Length: 310
Image 1 (cartoon, rainbow, N blue to C red):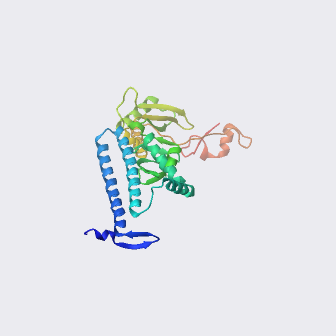
Image 2 (cartoon, helix red, strand yellow; image 1 turned 90 degrees about the vertical axis):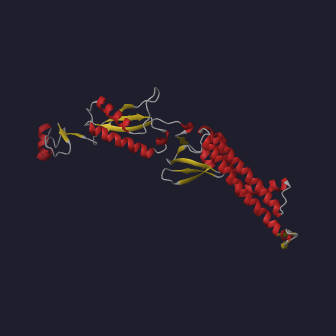
Image 3 (cartoon, helix red, strand yellow; image 1 turned 60 degrees about the vertical axis):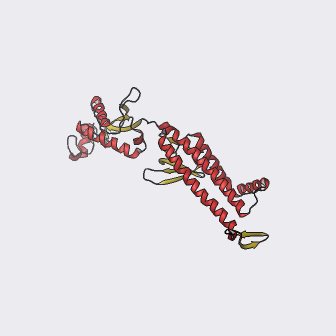
């Protein structure tokens, strides 16, 4: 008798009677869905904090699939509680097919690609990636429609799962290992190469996130190219995994340390230079051609912009 109000009829449309209970039951089901999703999230987060990081993504993938199943069961149960007849699979499949044909292709494709991402493990939550367009960031979530990438500026980028799976990207932290980084710099011609090497190694050691050397991971200085105006080098280092996730700050720190070390050792970082050789000017050559230019541009003056040679 106390629950008789559940059978109170609100309205009646085309043979379907809507009662208070018919509205209350799906509301309770959806409330239970919300609580269940929150419980799954809390449990999965606690488990991921307690296990090895290499196994944490497996827990995340299982939790995501469990969320999808809970949502599906809750929605079907709520539909039945309202009075919708879903017992006929043929009708349900036909309606789904019409929906996909009318505009759900991308939704279904992104959902399936999201499942593939969860179990393929080519990218995982926590990985630092770089997209083909140069966008960099950390994967914070792989949802049913899109993958969320958070940049180091804390800007969230939502990338459809299909684009994530089919596009080209670089995973800088795959398998939770660091990567070798190359920092280019240049010095003036005539500089002692051994002195340059000493200064660059000193700069690398001054940066706190440079990893200790091992047999396979060593800090090196390479002479890579004879440029137009300078000798071009690369400082080759193995930074920590956390530093790799912040490439802008990492490169800035090494450049700062390089400038400090090179200045300390008196090594010049050159400006672009051009040598101008005058062979003939209005029929005159050699010293006669230089005399025609006037005293301001004759060799030996400190304010000459370029070296004038015969």
